[in-house]
Length: 323
Image (cartoon, rainbow, N blue to C red; front, top):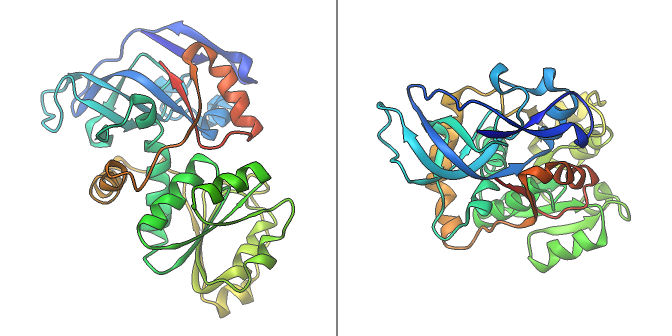
């Protein structure tokens, strides 16, 4: 089979298509003919440092954390899916390939009316948002949620999910174009953080949960905004992984500071997330209350261009590869 390989640590130019032998199907797995694969910032980290971010050893040189396609083969102990079923799946690497073998517990049916490109844009963002915002932070209807980076894949999907489930939504973006997008689709109250200070603008709002991928000096600002018993959840630290915190603020407001990495989670945890998503979010996707926004698609051979777009942060929504 063909797969896009990280030939060595480096820039987008190190990505090359190579031939691989198809994986052996193991118990509990399905084999998927990949039609599309989502591009995520973690793929860039894997490319820059494959030894640290590669995940499973046999997949260390093939990036890709989410796929959509048709099932080619089903292990004898799998009953939930059949050959020919259209599915999307969360994977721990290896998604930039023509085929992949996936634990069946991490597969979900392609929502009705969705293309494979749209379906490939779902798993990573949905699993990440559901696990962090709704399972860990226990966000609930009536609360305020701030997601930084509102036009990222996670931002757009998280804000839509939160609104559909009854939360009040707030966000920050880095350009007037992105601000107009958020306003046009009525996703949240929004500011351009390059022109306004979110700590000042939102100081009178009731914000109970913040999903942050910035870290650094955002941490104290986030803590100051949170309401009593607020929850700050980190999924990245693009501006610094060792921020200062105010312990008096933490104690007096009874704040919770937490975070997670999705890829290392046990399959049983990911399976629970998948079950809750199918029950709670799949109906929202199929009735149109939550949509997929794809900025651009690229052929697998043009993955380097997809990575450059991701690195530029100029995109709005997801970047997807046609396989």
